[in-house]
Image (cartoon, rainbow, N blue to C red):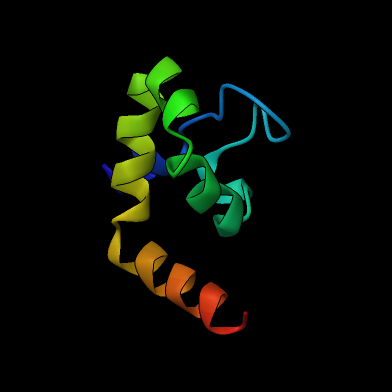
Length: 68
């Protein structure tokens, strides 16, 4: 399942057409907080939420924000 989630394609914006694991985590974190945007892309929102909750992604995201 994690492979399927990683291969989810971004359906909008700067990274349109890219897979989740090809996009900066800070951008994905920003996306998840955009309620209007996520409301338009409910299936993507579900997959993005699942991706960001994967243990290795959570660890990477925490490290990303430690550096700020």
